[in-house]
Image 1 (cartoon, rainbow, N blue to C red):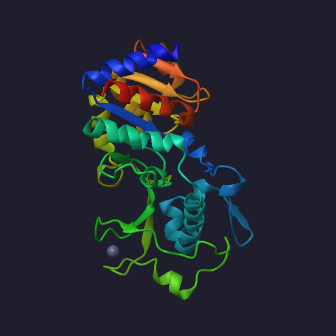
Image 2: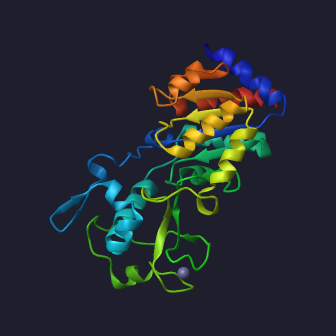
Length: 276
Ligand SMILES: [Zn+2]
């Protein structure tokens, strides 16, 4: 499938006032230098034991060793904060500005780069949460608080100071806060992770773009299958094959672009600009 055919299709939908949904995964953040944390960078040592991200990012571990779990997330937050949005992120901001209410972004990324690039919180559905926020671990309120302000230059393993520890408690009930992200042993829900909203968006999509998502988690798969069921156009943008590729390749209205999002998304900005 050549790029011009895809652009023509996108322009046709753009001119017809269709809804355009972008589902973004780790690939777009990897281009900003954010690792997946599944390798060495995600390991964490407590005493003489090494833990994997799948151990540290769980509610179970938070119950057992909450301060260690906080320290690991503070380290993650620092890495995300040191990264900058790339041209793929900025293209999504331009696309939101052009498309306005016809634009929705469903993202698996917790790094906050979409928000920092300029996408609105209203049209960004962070289905795995957002590391820029925290919330009460006892759920005394649904309110999201900013991620605690902890010295960004602190040593990875250093103990938290008394002053820093105080920042980890809910201002309302004084129980511990927790990072606002979906942990491995938790389930999607609407309240925090926009489960039903994301599926509803997929059903209304005239085009669904899959950007740098490998398709290993449940909700992205449901977004894709609902969009297929709704007869949407599907465009996969990924330099490598993914778990989605076979579905998109076999789907009559599916397109595959084997390029990075930072290369290809700015080209779509121009295509949209010309026809809206
Ligand atoms: Zn509370």
